[in-house]
Picture 1 (tube, rainbow, N blue to C red):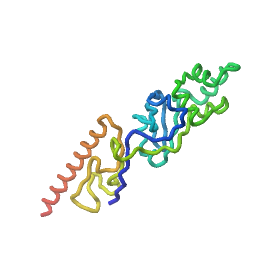
Picture 2: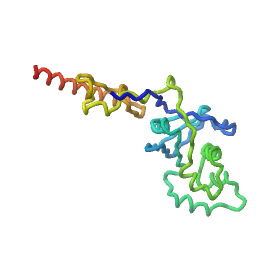
Picture 3: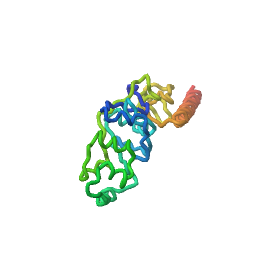
Picture 4: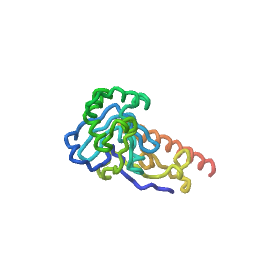
Length: 212
């Protein structure tokens, strides 16, 4: 059977901040959209001394483990053209920080992230506001994980979660290689796959009894 190694899936991505970010530790970043690989999240996260934490990050765990990169859309309800058009509202001699607060309604912590990873000017604002790239992210240690990825790959199992190479042996719950959000979903899915595996085991037992 194919077994994926167990890796952390803990809602936290580590990053080595510059001293500039220290005042923003513990600040939540809300109303953003996050993308990493094929995974997308419309949620919030917190800037911590270790990096980024929260439900929005958790939903990207699988892709973050593989790529260490994500993008932030600070204005998910704005189109690129909306952001571009708003540049016309910039006033002469107005600082970039003031402009970001006044026109785009960005909070100080969002502006701090922009400065940490981009140092934008007016010309680059539409791009970075819609897709600020953060790279060099790593996952927290396995012993700090909320849950883990890894386990038995679905390719090794039948539709009833029976091992293809070991008849009568079934897998369920966190034995499987999958990621899920917290908040009850993980427990629900463990119970659901347990039920599916149990039904498969009963069917296999009934079939074996008929064959005897």
